[in-house]
Image (cartoon, rainbow, N blue to C red):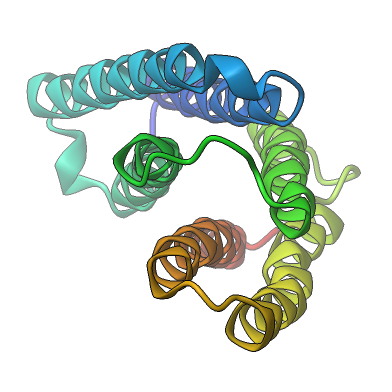
Length: 207
């Protein structure tokens, strides 16, 4: 890839990662401002629209410059798409809160929502390190750390589901919270996929 193409693509991958982080930060506001859930969800959805726009800008650039013919460029496009897909998942989680008329967040969902934000911050660090393309500052540790969020959340998810089916007697509440916990799990699975894409790219680059 030419330097100008590399900078363009990584600049927009960084933009997508930053939008994802802001989405997660906004979602975390629900913990402290439950009375404003609808307002917060609208903010999250607006950010997801921004992510769509950024991703389209990348794809248009690929068409104009014929970057689709280069393997490295396509690997980075796949990474950008995975990050954009994660913004979709955060938006879907936020919309679930409206669809299911959630008026109060369960205590055992707090940790997962906060972990979404922590994982997004780790992704920002990883993208910045990869963009530097420095042989000294290896991104592998950050890849492992990002991947580890899914491992930890699987434990939380199992505990959430066990408590839900053990303690909740209202079948409607079971249906609602099962879907919400599963939506949270999907976000961490997406982070895991992103970490795998980053690792494949680094192997390709011979990092």
